[in-house]
Image 1 (cartoon, helix red, strand yellow):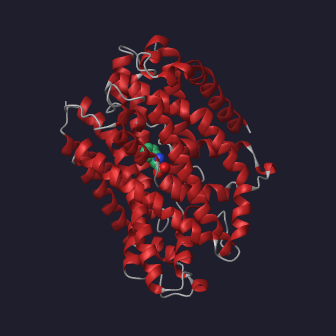
Image 2 (cartoon, rainbow, N blue to C red):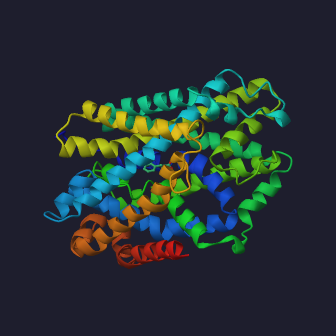
Image 3 (cartoon, rainbow, N blue to C red):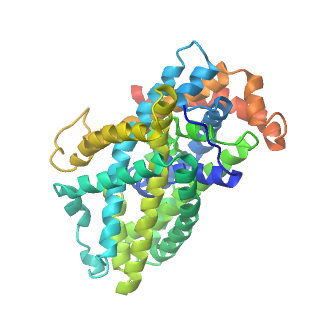
Length: 451
Ligand code: PHE
């Protein structure tokens, strides 16, 4: 088994976790989910879900990971020896890899848009005739497959270099840059003619739009965005130093993730309305909206620079998340199957590449192939965000709330009583983990199923 590495500092631990959380889930998925589910009311539910469900799940995963110093399978095996809990770990490895299959397809699209911006493709078009680049891309026989392959190769290489040299260094440099760039895009997007309708869409809730499936989608988005229920936060937490405060790291990660999703909403939605694009356009939303934003900047040089910076930033955000997903699987193979890091990376690369290709083709030649009414891409997305991540999160809170001893949980979360804030909040947090989170998740889930 590999020697377990520890993150260098509190700052890098937060950067790495926030790097996992902040990604395509915020920039690509959040805006289109808001659009598909009716705007502001959905955002309110998403925020409530984050506070009452995601934060307790996040802490549960952190407690399991750091306490056991193992990846998701080994962690449950160490903390509940001789029980079937370890299979929950196996389930989450499967969920994580399923996410990676479709995630890398979207990551591939962002590579394509990076290349397009490098060739000034957004500068030469009239804003009102932005060509349907996205349609051209996904219908192409091999370009999306090629880009998906490149994205997955980049992910594999970073993970291959290990937790400190690869993952930690990469995330710490790139995240701050991303925040800065999205602010610039917001300012521009809000100044477009007609943008105010987009802002109203984000801040004026229409509660009549809320249905059980909207609630499930909001909850799923919150879990997806915080990388929960698939053992990723658990695995990363196993590398957090024994003296770091888990509560502080969890809250910092959740706050930056939510903030980033809202920023992305305010960057995209005003431009969606300004461009007359349908807010419920689905996964293509940002890829149709962003070219419009860049094209309408007027000066070709300015628009090219903005496009290059922005798409590179999206790519990087996607990579800091995809590496966390792959690491979840790699830690399982290296710890449990005694494989070395590079061979483990290789095996998982091949598996996710194959299924990822099918996801990618489901926008083209395989678009009529349906599983339970969804294309392969949609199936992987919905299966994970609306089902597997929810299930995983539910099981992790059950484990910490009911299987682990309360004194162990307190010891881990409060650092043996030295983290004053955690000591003060322990009663509330434990109540959320033990009762509220599992009960609410199961209720929402079953209501949706029955209706
Ligand atoms: N949270 C990531 C994002 O928002 C996606 C992710 C899901 C990462 C699951 C890890 C595990 O893009």
